[in-house]
Length: 507
View (cartoon, rainbow, N blue to C red):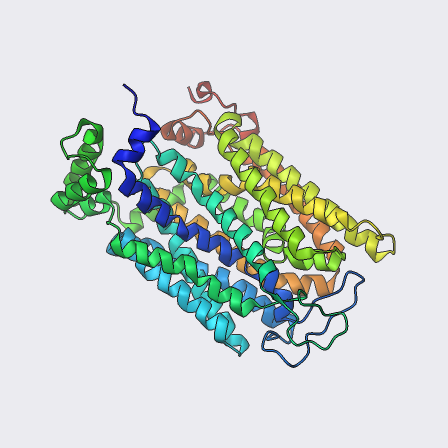
């Protein structure tokens, strides 16, 4: 008789609670990404009224901390530089100390970062705090997915595994919602200032400690994953832990496959595994896969992803929209809708069609934003600020529908076993590195050219990305990992644009 959802809940309630607790990690990641959205314009005193008039925060507050665009750019980019470090140390920490301990180290690191941001006065202190948040993000991004896969009940593993991106978006929705609740007049003497003009980002920073604090407390009482214990030769402890988190005796037939997998992992503990040099050699032999795994995140960043994520409210302020914070909050809801649809369609329509449609939609969204700023620059923008709002809706929805989840699948599906872990680390690290470079150069690019020129550049890169996916990315839907490798091993590999999605392509 099939196991019903209620039966799964009854028998696996402990493991489900552990997974739900671990999802606080992507929630914290989303809140960290979205933090600058409602905060950065107050921090650098760049708030404008809908008519384009600057609203000065004045000297009677500690909320204005950045005196130039370079300082604010480093603050925004620090979280991504920190994530580069976190992604580099995340793998070794997770493997050496365990999944649970990685969370126990990452959570207080994030909390310390937010405390420094909440109380710091000097710009370098704020940048340091933001970097610590980034280190935690890098570790959690690597460790969270592994913990969820190894603790989740097999019946719910797919559902929980798909939740990481979804919960990250929920975190961004929460931070924008909270951003509307911590507005202040900040003792400004500007006649245009109201009680909702500025953001009390220091209060917001302390609120952001809550997910990390809860994650730390939950992981204090959580179990290490049985698979990690087994791979360390601690088979008896692994079986005892599995029995506890599944809520059934170790002899129960429902977990027989998991017990067998633990025993197999323990047997392989003493066997020789591929060294880092050997894995690097395998990775070097996968040149086409490596190009794809690096180029897609690179091009994706330069479609304006970080500009939209980190500076959404700023875009609406410069567009002259009423209630820019509320509009930014609604934009995040479109990301949520797109991600939910992606979970439904990514295994039905395939990676390439969704990736191409996503790139096209992102280019269309950026075109609408660029068009508004161009019309505004020549004096024809009156009444057209809605173009920037619609463009943001289209961009966020399109990204979440395709490229958002696709980027995380590339390394997992394109590389052979010995190179997959290294390729995942490389892909994650380069994603953060490109984001940091992008954020550091964005303000200077706008100052050197114009808003419309920068956004038209994003449009061009979006369509370059679409062509790249059509030309080089093979369709992996319906293929086993071995069949995917055959696509790349051919002496004269067929171009991706001529590859179908059926298994016959590799026969």
